[in-house]
Length: 245
Image (cartoon, rainbow, N blue to C red):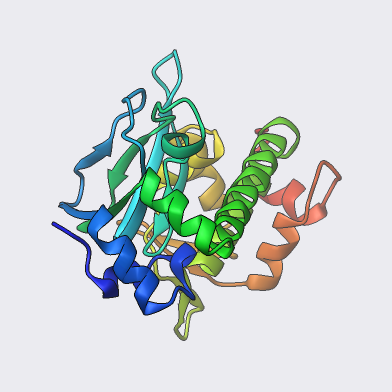
């Protein structure tokens, strides 16, 4: 199904395009719907020469190591682009992309996109900003896995999702709008499920966890203190957390 002008307008890299430019792009687009849990791309798949973008819903990207261990790389929400190797790399999907909710995926043919970029260089600039941000995020993730305590990574991922997806204020504290089950947190920060449960329990005065992955930030200041730690000693953490790196 061809994308509508409204759907094209929802993609961040196309913000600012004139209506006539969107009309020119429209015949070279396609939108496909996916149900929650459906695989959109498999790691190692050959990718078509298109730009992939998420019109609605949310998706998750995971990578499987040779040992079979699966790691969550990132989640994306509406308006974001993904699968850069389809345009700029070897044309092979670097990760598996799964629908976290019912969603719509828009694709734009490469030649049509390049023509649009020639006429509107800001598109390329926005794409570069997206890719640069993801490279920085990847660098921080790798650095954290190598040098930071696991509990620091735990605090930071909760802060990230609180900022990225938002929170709702309640008498108990700030509730994350996104649900983060133990397994998802563990696979995102490189620890086991059991370690994740232990760390969450050790921070019970800072974070409350409810069945299904509902997380409430009870004390944002203490959460920031945990997230700001590196390898230095801290009396609160030393007394509250298990000795796992």
